[in-house]
Image (cartoon, rainbow, N blue to C red; front, side, top):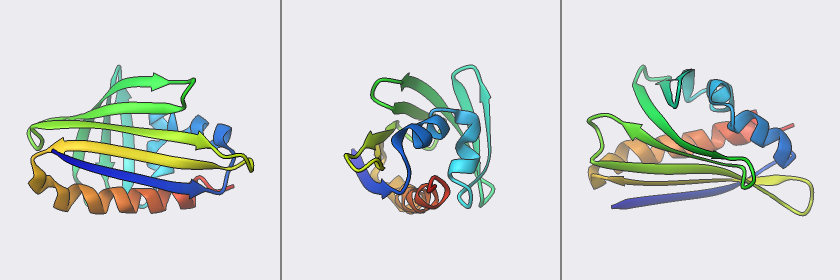
Length: 129
């Protein structure tokens, strides 16, 4: 199993970042430059990447108290996929964005890791304020 972990500072208040991250309809805005669209139907969101790839993700939980969204990719590209994105408040009024992704097969790392890195850069840029 491959585990990827990212923890980046955000130049914004936790409440502002969480308000956008928790709303799946806002994902294309949060990750603008990486995603071009996000649609929600029940607990399934369909995201379209800038390269044209379309992926379905099942929302497992939205944890308001911990400002955390857990989800899993649905489809044939993964044997297993579990991920979470979390906003962690800092003492200085700003916050951090923590993204953890666990998946099989290992070969998908070549696709997933660059998208996570680009997604972190996009979140830092688009959530600043």
